[in-house]
Amino acid sequence: MEMLIAGNWRGAADGRTEEVRSPFDGRTIDTVPVATVQDAQAALDRAEIGAHLQRTTPAHVRVDILLRAAALADERAEDIAQTISAESGKPITEARGEASRSGNIIRLAAYEGSQLYGSTLPLDANAGTGLDKIGFTLRQPVGIVVAITPFNYPALLVLHKIAPALAAGNAVVLKPARATPLTALKLAQCFVDAGLPPEALSVITGPGSSLGDVLVTDPRVRKVSFTGSTSIGTRISSIAGVKKLSLELGASCPVIILPDADLELASTAVAAGGYVNAGQVCISVQRVIVDRRVEKDFLDALVPKVEAIALGNPKEEDTRLGSLISEEEASRVHASILEARHSGARVLTGGDRDGAVVTPAVVAGVDPRSALSRNELFGPAVAVSSAPDMESAIAMANDNEYGLGAGIFTSDVAGAVQAMRQIDAGNIHINWSPLWRADLMPYGGLKGSGIGKEGVRSAVQEMTEEKTVVLHGRPW
Image (tube, rainbow, N blue to C red; front, side, top):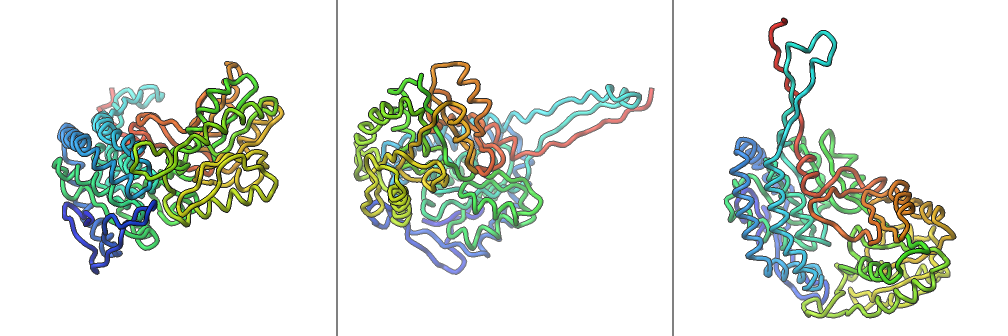
């Protein structure tokens, strides 16, 4: 499959290609170009034209284009789902769920992009100087947006960046994950076929190591939206220069379970929230901090649910857990589980590896200071630690460099209020795990989990800029 540069489907400048392989069985799915620095520069050159075209296109025209793209995404949802599953190893049922949200995200963006309201300014409140003046604000697109996306949700995380950017009137250069470029290219085809101005969208494929610096440091780029590791996000923030940044970075999401919790509900939520997409989700449950008075009962409820998760070929309808994105990642996750066991934790179930597949694991008695608890795992394992009381549990939840998502299970309203005020996370869920997201809600982390917010309305705000206008009349 070729990459897209300003409406042209083409290969790399030097003709190089690479295979996209299934992480489950290693079969070749397709080939894509390995873009060069010259290709990246060409995409940015054309984006300059696209930014001007987009800014001068009326909002209602942009809305019509995006609605056509949404309809095409709906029509092609099964093909997109098959592509997601093939290149990421995600079970087909999960892939269909992801693909089915594509059209709705584009429709949400179309609406929000048409609602760029300003506000009036009460200049007459400024003593003695404002009565003869009228002030107001205008919002306008930033211009060129560079979007860099990861492998774990190759449709949703692409659309959460490019749809709001295009809806707000920007041009976009997208660099999808090297492991999962095909989904991004098929989504881009929806926008092309819907009549998007050619220069408004480019999708370049290849290694971030050679393309990333070129894209994020270019002074013509006004906005970088990146989802990925904290280490790469830190590098982007250090080299990008003066421009707007949205960085959705790492996490080690905690769930607190108090003595008055519904343990059946809590165990069901953790059994889902810790293992969807083989745990390769930023808001996956990684740490469970359970009051020691109910720890045994909780584990007794959780383990059978985790053992019931069906492993297998991602293409099979009854598979609920497929492979990780690569054998290397599976080996890393497996090593983390073994390290925890060697340090005294108990692996109650799972944790075995076969190629890129790791069986879903529950690891109990985990030292909250250990790597399995503190570092981002991005794999199908949950680390369970105990706490003597709520205050200690909240302190343990906050004792981490990350702050993306958290959950707490309690039947006490006062405890829920205390938790939502004291837990340092960008998304807090009461009586569910952090692995839940509506595409319209603000989404982003605190501390090392990043800066800025996604969610369609928030993303449109992040991808526009506000300017103040003052109309001066004659003094009275």
